[in-house]
Image (cartoon, rainbow, N blue to C red; front, side):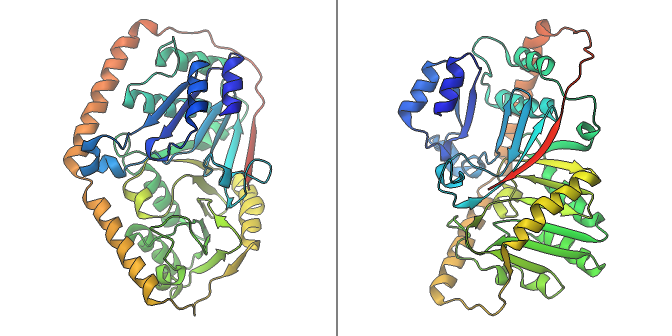
Length: 380
């Protein structure tokens, strides 16, 4: 927050969106940020009573995405001490983020614009959302000197804006795989659709590996043991590796040295059916090769093969059944009527925004400028 306050004071336009359930920002720093001119939004308030009996209470904003001038960052890191490296925090988690320069900028800004339109909030103190979007799309453009802008895209899951986009991309990757699939997931849960896709891949001779965490920070998944969750697929040939020294918090899928996706999407019931999520999807053989060598092989070297003989006691068994019940109830409460109402509301907002913005749209002359581009991974 201090860095954002400093940036705002030197004239940088700063907007911070946080899911209300995870809004633990220091109140004095928040107020200082707002007084400096920053825009702060706590999304999907849990204090609304009508949220408690609908899907809205459980549908949280789990996306992690940032745009700073010509740089876009998307990945799995939360902004908290325990997710920071030794330099910035306590280094309790291993995370994975992708930094891109002059790549996917327009897509990233459109992501924020859609969220702003959905909640009817502003991205700038004086300019309209359409004006600020156009301003920065012209000032910081995607590079014309690489095909990566065509081979990468931001994919998302938002129950009111998109329908299972990330899920469909992941299933398509696994269903088309011919040689190898690697899944990096901290909260692996046996979802029927992906279980079937993995089983089918194993049956047709695809080598499939799951890299996951031996310990979890989330109460709903902490009691679960990986050998119970993956037993059926292990019998078909799945290889499971566990990280023991820290919490693994990376979320990624990789197939055939050709394609991968990473971001906030967990392989659990909340991400598959409830939460808002954002991933980056890259279909490029060279970048996939770098991802395998730099990320997968290194993370795998820090893991151990799953112990299939581990036993659990009756207390852990009780906790497993309790959280299973909780997850089932959270899904059941997500009624379809509320979903349809929100979708209609969003469509109405979009139409109204279009009508308001008609006077702001104009054509700019094309610019033949040279833009460097970069494509980096970061994990801690």
